[in-house]
Image 1 (tube, rainbow, N blue to C red):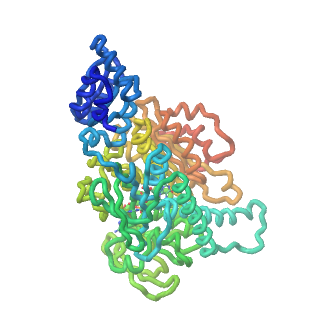
Image 2 (image 1 turned 120 degrees about the vertical axis):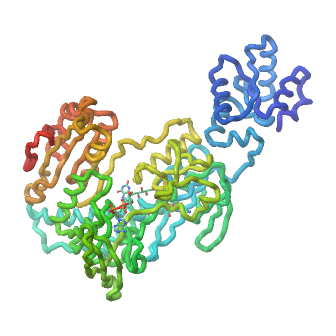
Image 3 (image 1 turned 90 degrees about the vertical axis):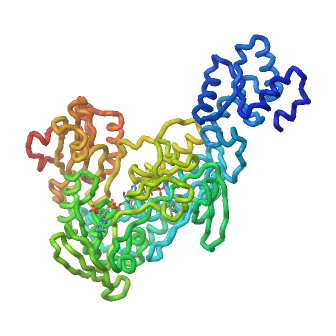
Length: 600
Ligand code: FAD
Ligand code: NA7
């Protein structure tokens, strides 16, 4: 009931209160010394909302009478007491809630209309699901729209996004499968007698991986149901900034509205613009679901998706070639990148360097068939080879092209099509947010998307002000010899700091488990990059060796907390491990002393 309608029910002495509420779209009953009242007024100023306030403490006895009347009207005895367009809102918390969830301006202007949802998330991947579940836990009405457009080869999958279906999860499981092959070879040196030589069965592995993924898909759907998040298995496009059109697999159209919309649509693999690429090539989207062993494989591209896939395929004993246009692992520390390349090469992976594909044609059909790849080297020479499978890992593009963003004016980075947002993940259209792989200028990693999603929901619907901290994000490349890092690469540092200010400590190490099989001598390596002017603060951590991901996760905390080299030196190692080398790393690169052949 609008307070103005109560006018006749209360005494004449309340007429002044009623008049204030009815005559002012935004009315704040306040006390001049009250910090919550000041906070509320500051919120209105920030949002450019005109408001009228009276300070009850400056009004002698009249102020007390007004406060009593307000208590009678609203059952609220405290200030601030806020009214928007005649409707009682509440105090500071209630006003802040509307400010956070983005509906305050519309409510103040009297244009707010109740929508179907508080939050609709487009994209049921790592970031989208995290945000949706958090918002629902905070009591909001939430929907998730997720739709997988099949790959050009027809591969499709369930709820959970890239990580679960065609990214981290199948990749790490296949990496593990390849490592097991290696371990089995090592096992004979540890006294195991193998009845017969182990053979890899692609079909069995792919089936097991698929079953695991399906169980995860099911888990995500159940979680959404439990949290009462409405799930639409439909492709979403914007009709206006609060309204979406959803089209499901049967072309059934639904329209829904929301106060806030989160875009978490991720990205999909690129294909090079050459004849036969889409017709005969596959991407990581297809590889994990390939029903047959890929056989002799060409992987085009040299970033982490390419090297990881090439690594596990070679681990299964397949003939694998990586076609590198320029450098390995652009964006990563190049010393480490080249060490990874050298290790892979020593395990039989072939590299066609400074080379780009020109065309792919079918030589013979089959599962797998044979494909002829023509390629050109940087010196202009043209070559041709036959492969059973050609996989393109030539980057990914955000799924922002066909979702109606132009119509509603959401700003994209013209260079990469990603959504430009502020530090609170808000786009230039105030009620539209973006996180995860589709957000511009942040690492494309699952935990990053999850953390950003959770924090966004907490800022919108909880009591959190914290923006996502995108600095010092650790990561690992799951090549046969894993590479973990956090912080700066040596290349980054020379761009940002004076070369004389940088000290690099490093060492090779021999994992104990490699000693009996006598393998990979001088392949494992660690380095700490320190800033002299900051008391040798460690600003870069790099490790190449078994279980690098596990090692890096722990040390990432040290870097995040600002650890110095002396803290690493004070740390007592755990023996015998690979990680302990970071507690005994005393040789600097500048000294020129050899770091080869040190072992634990
Ligand atoms: P996604 O997980 O991509 O989810 C987006 C979802 O939105 C998808 O389901 C998509 O189909 C859907 N969608 C798109 N458009 C629409 C629309 N209009 N309507 C409805 N739904 C739509 N990260 C790591 O941290 N560790 C790893 O080891 C790792 N390995 C990787 C390996 C590979 C091969 C790849 C490709 C990626 C890997 N990543 C890894 C990256 C990680 O998978 C991504 O950073 C993460 O999945 C991004 O999450 P997201 O929520 O932004 O988007
Ligand atoms: P990246 O990191 O964008 O790397 C793409 C790689 O593909 C890189 O080595 C490129 O070489 C190469 N590339 C790109 N276009 C071509 C063409 N046309 N021909 C040959 N080689 C090419 O992509 P990824 O797929 O590895 O990973 C993308 C994200 O997915 C990653 O951030 C993860 O989060 C998941 P270049 O160095 O440009 O010469």
